Amino acid sequence: MSMVALEGLRPWLLQRLTALYLLIYTAYVVVYWSFFNTIAYQSWQQWLAADLNQILLGLFYLAVLIHAWVGIRDVLLDYIKPFLLRLLLLFAVAIFLIGSGFWLVKILMMVNG
Amino acid sequence: MASTNRPVYLNLLKIKLPISGIISIFHRLTGVLMFIAIPVSLYLLQLTVDGVSSYESVASLMLHPLSRFFILLVTWSFVHHLLTGIRFLLIDLDLFLEKSSIRYSAWTVVGLEFLIMLFIIVGLFL
Image (cartoon, rainbow over the protein chains, first blue to last red):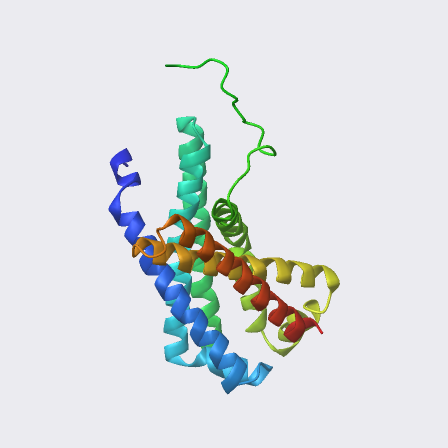
């Protein structure tokens, strides 16, 4: 991993694109569950089982994980100076986020079954 | 040119930060908080799809005062992070760059945040 890859336009753009999706998805969920449905066991299962909602929720968590990666990476680069410790923490965060992604896939597979 | 007796305030409590600086620091703090909350959200999501009884255990967990505190904390984090984030996006578009409107937009965020949190607390907890 080159240090050049750790800065620049790409993470900046990723952060803003994911932010935009998170904003739109949040509006969708808040409006839907406030005005068009009431949360209960049945309605929640049906909503989660719909293909479109699965895709949008999957994209939501993908956006969250990317957004969290760029954000936490910035925080670590700002406050953690020793190179090895910085690398170790970045690695731990990456594992944490990738693991969370796999967990979500497992949860989504539970819904239809 | 170099003055040796300039006051250097590294005492964080003595630095007077403008409102835009304060909400910016909280943008970062709330981001870290929600990063920690990611696995919690997944755990709760898993419980809601794991049968009626686990779904209901989540529902009853929500009634506990301690979990209500954390729900409120994460909800506030989300609201603050979202509003300050929108402000940052607008600043990226070269809006509100004047010194006076920077302060004005920061206070607008604080005001909106207060209203939304009031609405959420009244709606969810009262």
